Image (cartoon, rainbow, N blue to C red):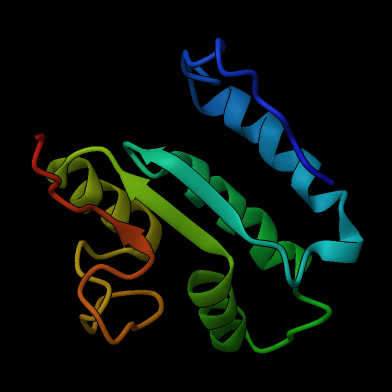
Length: 127
């Protein structure tokens, strides 16, 4: 299943956590692709969208992956991706999603080999 957003509709898709809950609830209905699905937030600010998806995936994958830590590792490494709009929002999003602003630390819910995890921010020089 694909979602299409028209290019003229570039305003934010949600105003608060209540709308994210509604969007996230639809994801758990897609049982055929819940384990292999990829989720991206192309304009990460607070990480609330990815966090709400993670909450639903943790519950939705319980039967397929019974071990909690293995499930968390699978979700954070293979299913959640974000592109932050500033360095500050990248740190905020990582803290919100991984529990630590550096996901390679011992405080992260799932440890990564790199300090950014799957929430990226790159400084791009304008030409």
